[in-house]
Amino acid sequence: MERINSQANIQSMLQTLRAYQAQAAGSNETLAPGGDTTVAAPKGQPFMEAVKSTLNSVNDLQLKARDVSTAYERGEAVPLTDVVLSMQKSSMAFEATLQVRNKVLKAYEDILNMPV
Image (spheres, one colour):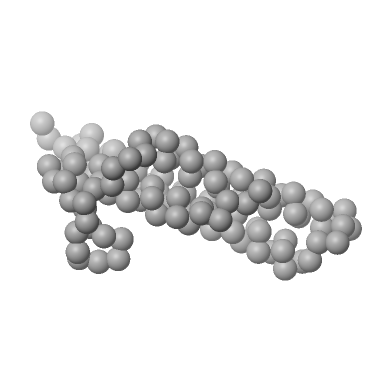
């Protein structure tokens, strides 16, 4: 079953990352996703659970894309548009996750290189 909230999960993960970044900088506020205004840091779901949930969503999208593609190749009555859309959703979710991972690694490296 496809999770419709994968984009929401990614946004939640990004917002959580921003909140932790703001806390590390000594602030309880973070930038809103689209601009200059600030919002309170999110409370609730622990960071690792948000990451795990997001990764599970991406994995589910990839499994669904594989299943739809395999069904199409077997000659089942699966519209080609469904195959293409599921593969695109899977690809975009993976790329977004990869970009978030790269940003987290960059932030980690920046922290390691800070003078003490």
